[in-house]
Amino acid sequence: MAIAIVVHGGAGAWNLPLQVYGEARKACETAVHTGRAILREGGSALDAVEAAVTVLEDCPVLDAGIGSYPNTEGNIEMDALIMDGRTLSLGAIAAIQRVRNPIQLARRVMLESGHQFLVGSGADAFADRIHFPRCDPEELLVPQQSNFSIEPELSSAKVLGDTVGAVALDLNGNVAAATSTGGTANKRPGRVGDSPLVGCGAYADNWSAAVSATGYGEALMRVVISKRVCDFVATGLSAMAACEAAIRLLEERTGGEGGLISVDSRGQVGFAYNTRAMPCAYAVNEEPIVSS
Picture 1 (tube, rainbow, N blue to C red):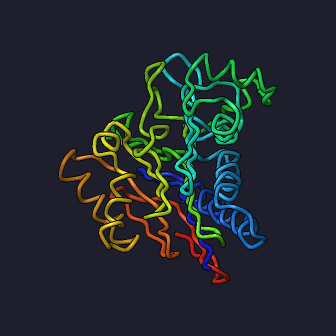
Picture 2: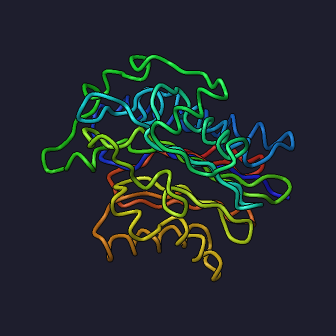
């Protein structure tokens, strides 16, 4: 049985300096290495995507965990989603604060909360009840804006580095997906984008594929883009063709910008985006890691 893992560091403008993009690509390669090591040992796709996204959340040039964008009040509110393609179980959180690794808390929501989606103060209360590690808000802030150049014509909703994610296929033929984000720069307090919404920010189903999305969330959620990719795969498209078709649909129906990564139940990987760039990396079986 094949193993495969694909990760992304967010579709966006990704202007100069080039070393910042290089750091994002290196983080994607490290995330793939971390996730594939789990898959090689017979670990689950779910464990692999959680570990891979944790690596990306710890990278300060990416908009998730450390390095998340503050909202208009200067606070960081993060969202995350993880989904198991074997059972269709999921865990999601939105507007969580004072957590370094939101994807790990989303996994705990799936396993321990009795629910699948917790938001705001309810997510915070759950984190405290299970003694989930908390951090000071200052630990999540980095001088990110000085590293990135945002073109005047781009709205704050379309700035770069929006969202990180991973998808994987394990030796048992199970797929999983995970997505995490700090949201768009200068968003309104309480704004939730596509990332924690099942079928939008991510979707995983053993009968088709696992998908993680990134980009302008207000457009991505309108076409339920991750579920759309899975549906395309179910009709016979490859993972790559399904991602490309979903991006075309996003453009035609909403004019939106974004990116996708996918792995199908046969171990075929796919990715597509219509933004300037999207740092990503993938590996299939024992083949060398490919990154862009």
